[in-house]
Figure 1 (tube, one colour):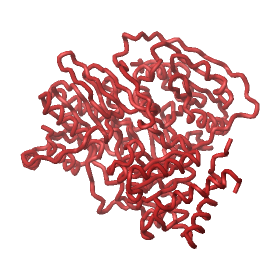
Figure 2: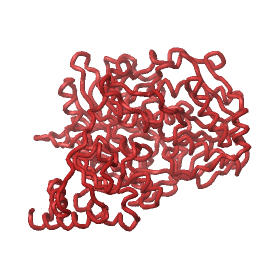
Figure 3: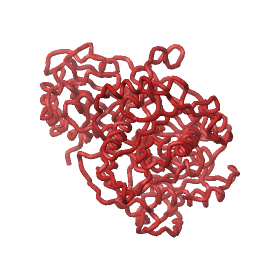
Figure 4: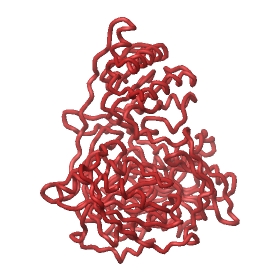
Length: 345
Length: 269
């Protein structure tokens, strides 16, 4: 655990916007580059620099991408012991960097790893953290970061700021901002920090890792989500949901009812006790739209619902309402779309 | 074995409505419930107690009404429940909340003895921040295991636990020493019905009260005034309107739908 007495309490000494570059086995998370893109915009408003920070067994190979998306500096902490993500050593490494280099803003992806890390880092640093934000802007008057997040299941939006503590920390949902490379990427500076941790100082040991399609799925990564409910009638019928999702380069999901009926794993549940999603296109198939479901998807850009009941609440939030049986409708729709794909419409 | 579970009473977010004229939440008549993730945390704690022996203590921070959530925990088989309640905590953000609960939990350790396993839900359904559990774990400097889906092994003699959690890409199984702090997923277990003796005991149980009077507090870390994050403004997102019903023959509707979806079609390489 870090020594808090080393933390500079003069907030005017904190500069620049930092983005945590999340990686698993050396592969970066897409949200990191989305955040770098946003950080460039915030930095130009604030008149400061953009930097990236990564912890891992080996992360220097990420530098090219990090600079391509606009970081001017890349702070790295590399060590065998960081091969797998573990809360405590990652926290301590990040805290060391923050205490030494004093970023004004620190952005983290609101992924499983990012949420695990940010809560413990913010507490260790005794600073504020705004979770799961969907909007970020700099207050032109004070220079503070305004962070907007949905709360009460998306029924209310709150704009939060952190005036007296640094860094201003926030997790941002994947897919909210678009990753755009800079026009003329420059070779940035890599600052490699040595931290003397040894494995015997870390009490948590990872015994086994299972990578599985049926495990945790971050539905937030996808532009298109095809989702099914009770009206799909069977687990087998989710085959057509998956087929449509695949055709659209998206992913598949379902309602709590679909989980309870055993049609889909809980890891793919959208809604209050599942995941909150906001894709560009959400196709709800045989989902009636219980409020628990609506709060998890009603911020999607476009919603198309297919349901036999014209009074189903799902239609109250849908841009396009299709009063049909999804099980009969989807195969025809897939056939039509395949033709369009082949013959260009 | 002593298990301490942190719980929160929350408004049933699925029943909160928005007044679009005033831009405020309508909370009247919205039932307060035990945060669903914490129902599973209590369930797991009681299951472990029944298997290994020991006791389960519950703590919540909130107004006096939050006793209801505590009684629900007792009816699930928890042994004792503490309500941490004081005006000084009003308006706490997650950092101030984790401070208050940390001090409350330290008091419980004084009164009830050392804790082996700490549990909380992975997040609360009203704020959805997922910060308070990790915050408390950090203050205690305990190993943290978030998104818990299974306790594979508990060894009280050698003081370790083996547990499985969700990750972005699947699952991982971790060995950690006791004491340890878990935040839990719903899929951790299936809720059982409260047996009648538990229900009767819960009804009669006294809730223990904690406040600034019996818990030593650093007032500089409590409440709205000492919370690092502030609310600038709150507003209601634009209400969605019911859109067009696609009509015509079945084939017409298929064609219209395909046209709407076509921009998302994957390019064939």
